[in-house]
Structure formats: structure tokens, C-alpha cells
Length: 286
Image (cartoon, rainbow, N blue to C red; front, side):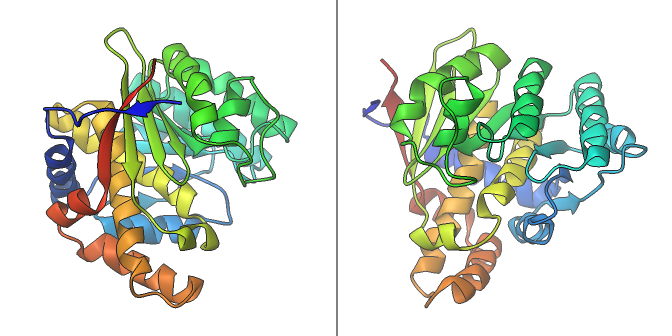
């Protein structure tokens, strides 16, 4: 298990606040190829946070749209044959045009089709993988997955598989859980950041994790434009989602009121508040 050490002297909280400001100023266009269950909440989250959503998944359009989008989300939950064809085209176009794309391997491990798709796309340079612990373990070939979309593994148990996935793809890997962990292991020093934020009611609202994948694509786009690392972009996306969850949890009475308060907090929290509510700690991966 990675042990917490002293915060980085680079002031990661200040970087989060800066990226939140940049996201809201630039409103990146996020091309979402995602499952039908979560399209509305994903679009709502992007709009509330400060990005612009586009749900374009017809194979005749996805390649063209990925070329003009700021970032691309590939979410393998509930895939159709037509959507899969569109995902292949979008990924190829994103790579051709250096558009950062995010892989969200929903419920891989237990279902062969999506597991094969997600595993095959590991060699197509996703800028980031965002998943729960069981999905990370299964994607790395180290386990059978969780209970549907629910994780049965711990974040700490997914550390080594996440390191392997980051080294294989050259991208950042984010593990969602009670504490989120973001890992980047490329040619330089390994980076690992814990994010402590959120609220248990996030697990009672449909699509919160899937929306996080889309927001991650938006943050990757603005970070690259500003010369900020992909690792910091993925941390900022998780901090924004989690801080809004923390704030919403103070006023919600249940899942319904929480969902409304969470969207409001995504929109209304100041950059400094987001950085303060999401506690960031550097992790030791040895």
C-alpha cells in the first residue's frame, strides 16, 4: 500500500485552482462516446463544471468530430455495434490529431466484448484511464473484475496493476474509490497522488464516475494548452468532482437532493474552494 508522504513543493493545490480557472475560461469541447444510461448526467456535469459536451457517436461522424474536439471520452459501458465502430474511428482520429482521449473501461473483466475492446485499445495511447479498482485490476489482466459496475477490490490493491497500465500506455491511470489515486509511470519519475474528497452519496447517483471520465478529457485539453502535465490534469478533474461532492453532502437529505446540490457545487465552487476541499497528498509507490 502506498504510504503518504509530505506534500509536493510544487503546490498541487495551486495547480488545481489554476486548471479550474482555465477550464471555465476556455470551455473545452469534450466529445463523449459513452453509454446510453449516463449521457444526460455526463452532459450536465460538463456544462456545470465549465466545459462543453458533444454526444456524437455515429461512425460516419465520430472521426471528423474527434479531429475538432478538445478531448475525447471512450466509455465502453453498454456498447452497440454501431457505437463500437464509431469508437474505433474516434480513437484513430484523436491519435492522428493529437487530441487527448480517455478510456473508461466500465465493468471490464466480467463481460468479454467490452474487456476485449478496452484491452485492445491500451496500445492506442490513451492519455488517461479512469476506472474503479476492480476495473483497473481486470484491465491489467490481474483479476476477473467486480460486481457489474461496482468494485470489489480496494484502491491499494490496484496500485501495481495501475503502474503496469501506465507504463504500457504511456498515460496516466486514475483509480476511483473512497480515496482516489492517480498514477503516472512513464520515462520520468513515477508520480502518485491521493485525493481525499467526495461523499458516499456519489455512489447513489447514476453516472458520477462516467461523468468524471468526460471531465477528465476536458481537463487534459486545457492542461496541455497551458503546458501543465497530464497527471495534474487528471488530479484536477478528480478534485473538482470530489470537492463538489463534499460540498453537496453538507446540504443533501438523500440521493435526489444530493444530485442537484452536486451539480450546483460543480458550477458555483470557486477554484480556491475546490483546491481546499480536495486534500491532495503525494504517495509513495515503493
